[in-house]
Length: 258
Image (cartoon, rainbow, N blue to C red):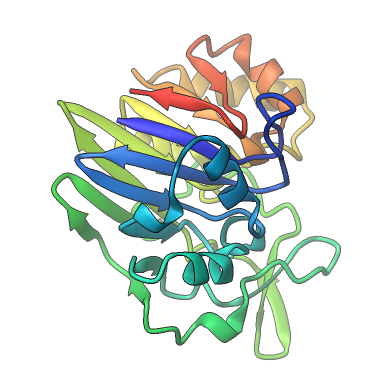
């Protein structure tokens, strides 16, 4: 299996562009999967630099309904005219950040014929499965950090039920791909017990040293190698790395072979 980081907050070197967002191209079991699409077309530009053809993508997945993961959807639909896009029911909701900025997806795309809406556990191939947020309890929930959803005329705390996770089982190993892990990275790791976990930890707003060390120590209890990025935060990564040796940071332009 190969995973190519197409969009991330940082870049491997000056040859690649970066943005606040995430997009990963996955080659596994003969499949070409695009997991998230960043904010716009940047993921595609970096793909070309890595020698990847977005037209070859046979399966697209949006992890949740925020612009930094699905903002590139319209560009993808133009560039690739065949792949279905798996997206969680409710991901086209009206989402806002703590500064009252709209951070949702382009709602005009919600009725596009290529949207495949998921709710329960969804098998999309041999050993390739999408799991809904409902599978994850929130015993170790890290916080909303001001993120809300507009329901009617009232803004309420985002439940993050529009989130989903990709589990790939290959050669006896379980590889879990998560976008931002809003439901709680500790609970996600406990629920799936993967050998590899790639994704954001939703810790970039946490500055307390003990809180970060506790998260890292909890994650170290699992026999898991972590590749993190995006909403984890570089400073937070550096602090957690002290307590979690099998924690690695991935950047746009980077290739991970598993």
